[in-house]
Image 1 (cartoon, rainbow, N blue to C red):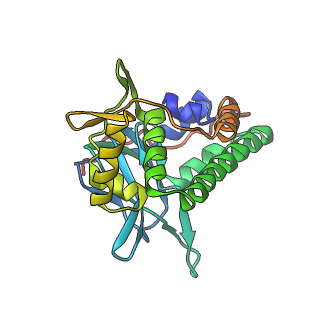
Image 2 (cartoon, helix red, strand yellow):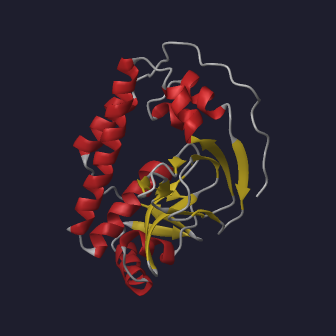
Length: 252
């Protein structure tokens, strides 16, 4: 809930969106949605971790990890018949509980926002997409070593837990997952991890990594995102009543 609010949605809006959802639990490794599947719903991660891929034929790149409070499945493409299809693929990294919400319901809630709130939300969405584009552009010009460093920085900022030795990443993300995030091979990632460990940049604790020194950060982008995330979006009118109640858990 707090993470959704920090995305710019006020508590009342967040509660209204989550008021009607189907709860589905996915085991580790289960596919949540595939490229080309209908995009008439969005997914909110309530528990666990999810990998979001950009898949192309027999290759795929891990573009982000989603955790509790993150929204996935909102990126879609249109088809000639006017339908909408999922652009990416999502797979459960751990056991995950997902709230599935229809786009129709989300749009109904957003129609209750006043114009200034919608403008603020639009600015936030634009800033998020701009940050994603900036990240992709940076990665194109980076070496694999620099990409891996950037990935550790991002994971530490989003999911890190303070540790006496640095910032621990409680993800259990192996070399294969890291290779997918930098579009490299597993042997190359293994070589880079050895180098970074020798240089004191990271350490290992069982299957978990510890980031021991911060990397360069895109301050301007992060600062702008922070400003927009502080906007409190309020609804101008009570949310219209609907028949039916919150959906109970639908076990997958």
